[in-house]
Image (cartoon, rainbow, N blue to C red; front, side, top):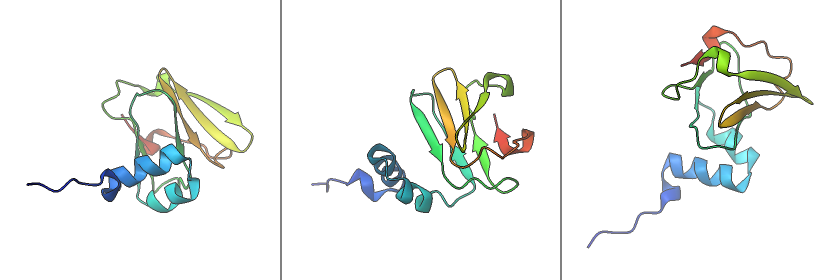
Length: 104
């Protein structure tokens, strides 16, 4: 008989639980890595601690090109909109992203 596994016990499950609950503090602690990945499932993704030159926003496998991203400023945030969703860089209004900040 196999044991039932708690989906929140995996790193991916913990990230999903934090995102669904809107717990930005937990997301910030969890996403201390260098690569942020997104999937076209609609809605919005948040990056809370983007460091230019260190971190990478991965949009690999989504069929997007740099021309598909529409940047805008909302308050202190930088918002990258694309068909199917958006990525919000919290406090990123002053960040000037370049080709090295992305993987397509």
